Length: 85
Image (tube, rainbow, N blue to C red):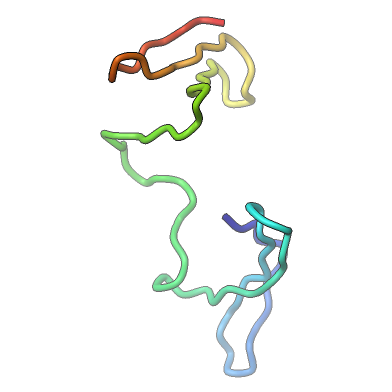
């Protein structure tokens, strides 16, 4: 995943994003602003299946600021069950 920290224009006039790597060492580089090379970070439609790779489960909050009622969803016997905290 990358964080956009600026924009630039190449010599041929193509717009490029200056990005920072968030998963590794914080490497900085450029990505071409072309739909063949980039994708939206958020899903545009409702997903029917989500894979959770965190062994401690998934936290659900009642407010977008990650506050409010906290419920932790974990996988038990191949079923996702909510566990209040």
